Image (cartoon, rainbow, N blue to C red; front, top):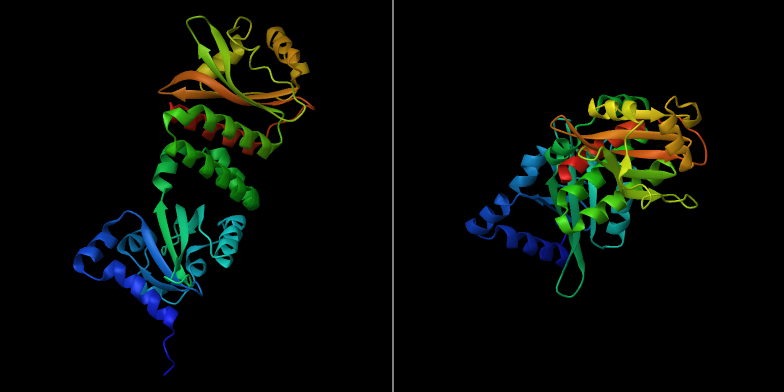
Length: 322
């Protein structure tokens, strides 16, 4: 029989801290987070009841296996997995949002934190992972449109990156306090604008008492002129078709502003140097509160299904944020 290493004994002692008494077992199994402990080779040695509920796996089914071998699948973001592997190699903590797979094959989004377990003298004993299923919260916030589903089927690699971006932004919004609202919106505009390589990303609020709209948030790419301060209480006269579309919950997409039939709209957009514009309404209980959109300034462009899908999700998130 091979001798048991001191580190294995120490790791077993750590696990016993979770399960030494009925009270401690009850506490470990009642927490909302799924808890998994692995050894230094990253092989499963213990899980709590919440992990079984989240994943569908019992300990005897996965003991001795690496988590990635049964929790990850074709739509799991390889970049996130690589970041996790790097952190484990360096024995440092890491937090990620990850698309995982349950035992029954269903996908779920988890918020994952992994921390190293060390002995009193600093030796690495293993790792403890804490996971929270955030799928339901994300579904409530996102309501992925059909265009996103079509995009996902046609471009799996792009789907993974797009969904990861949506999940990260949405989770930030879910966790946001009112004092962080504006900062999170500005950061989100920067991320989505950079992701698609547009020149300007913006949010406007409608004021139907004054029949005007105002630019509340704006991000611009390097070299693009900002117009937020100028675009305050802009009258909607001459923009009836634009406004009617938004009141009906329809997007406005103008791939070539120079060919826009509305003289008022064309003049206002060309004043900002805009060659193409996409504007998605923000709807709440059938009422339009404003719109979020992208501008093409350097060149005219036809906006893609992915851009439309993300802005539709983003608009819903902004309404939910309040």
